[in-house]
Image (cartoon, rainbow, N blue to C red; front, side):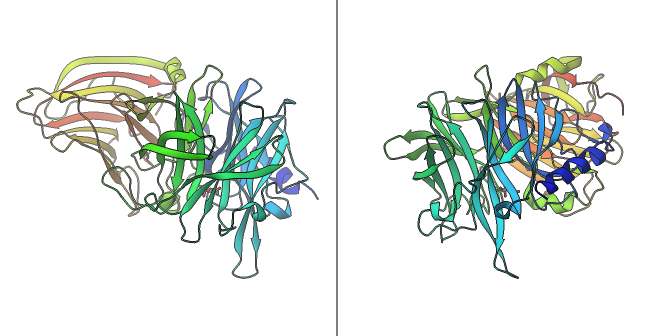
Length: 498
Ligand code: FRU
């Protein structure tokens, strides 16, 4: 029966999702209705609300045959689940509906463009990846009869049909459409292909938008391409990265390139590159333009290399989205700020100025797991800087997560060794940050199972998930030497029940 898998998934998620207690989820970071979640998909503003789809396997907390989960929101912080939008139920997507994006059509319908994956060739079968469409009304989506709209034959010669995925589609000023899709050369390096269309249904190859010269990993996944403050910005999530100083780390990473797109050649020329997130858990981000003109990004707040092991802990769901972040360009760099709507949900303010931090300091009113803190740290005596400043959070007798800063090296470190993990996976990451006359500014957002640190007004961000039981609520500060700290703290939403 047609759509059988979708009908089944919708019944299942309603039944099982309803059983998951809200207290097991974060307060304002989206988790799957039930089961597994990876990349954000189809992030869009459509008919008066934000839509976020996601890579989804409702039946287990591990990756498997991909569906598209669906949620809507008015403020990007409170999400309502809608029934799953896509399930793998056609020959061309029988192995999964992989990542993709959304655009509104002139008739008011919403178009989803995604990667349909099928298997080819018996025992040692391999993926065949093609681009497909579904049209809907914000609730129900009908797969297009002409799928796939970008088939293997639409790949430039020599590129692999096994890695051809993650279309990001947008409307062009002349009323047409473009999309950028990740592909792979025989030397395993990623390429980004640009396609164009008059009607969003018939597509033709336009150009190679950008190529991996070997610097950023191998295959390039989940591209996004947009204008920001007079510049063209290209996001990509490379697999198999080699580390580069404190900028890029091993494994799956995120790269932001800022530069210029040449309409004539269809090529993007980068002038600057940087990591999008310097923490442990952030991947495959997508952006939208909000009705009031903000470019907002959301990413999968997870790391492919730690999925299996974090899943070792019993949880009725797996995978979280990051906080939506407002993007801007300053001094040629990408800056990120938590979306401003977050300020609407602040309560329990506590504020301290010029706190001397030497031994351990705890401050009345500063604790909790759903918390925003704006912290400025500087040496008490600029002639004699402290050696290390430490903030511990999600702390009790057993647990603590640690953010520490060493001014001599200018390195900020996140450490989640004592955050509930029973496995030898990555627990620490360091990031080289700037100091402003010896001062650093840390804007920290905690939401039960994550920490996102916006450093120096959003010049860099470090994101990590934690497994710590929500009852560990302590926050403490310490310095080796003499530091001085200003702090403004708010509780976020109304968690404050252990
Ligand atoms: C990135 C990714 C995408 C793919 C999807 C499959 O995390 O590997 O390239 O479309 O996940 O779930």
